[in-house]
Image 1: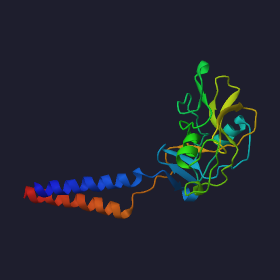
Image 2 (image 1 turned 90 degrees about the vertical axis):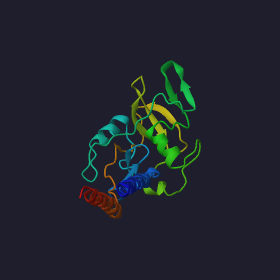
Image 3 (image 1 turned 120 degrees about the horizontal axis):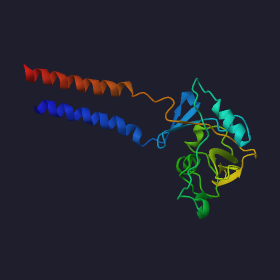
Image 4 (image 1 turned 120 degrees about the vertical axis):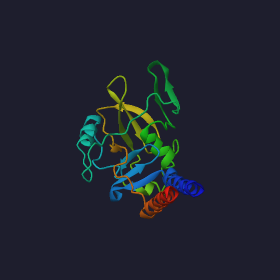
Length: 210
């Protein structure tokens, strides 16, 4: 009984270690560098932040809907949370949020929480930013429209501003994909550890029966 309990505890510990190994991760390269997975939001970013140049909101949505990367479709524009209590500006009549420090949106989270951006500031080279290419200091479309349906929410990677802009204007588009497009496999050594412990637990059980 004691042997079985000890082995079971070891299995649980090894499983916990495997889970913890990815718990502190934030951004991880995917698809051979073509994409970047955000473990905090369970969201995958296209590594190239400026594939098609600037375009209208309608053009951006059409482009991203038809995008296929390494055989993977289902891409979209990032969303903007509305309302967002983290934003510096709040417009009560329509419950809309704008301004700086908007970390509730997908782009705001990336800029402020993962890439080290600051309000009114810029992005500076760091390990997370190095996972991406062509991150423009300009403004990017989100998929979220304002109540008027003539404006769409945008995010500026030069300064960190969330603002509504006319859908007919030209802005950049950055593709994202819900979930992990290429889940990282558990290391082989970890699988061997887990399976070995489980096997030992089975042997111990057989001995007890005999």
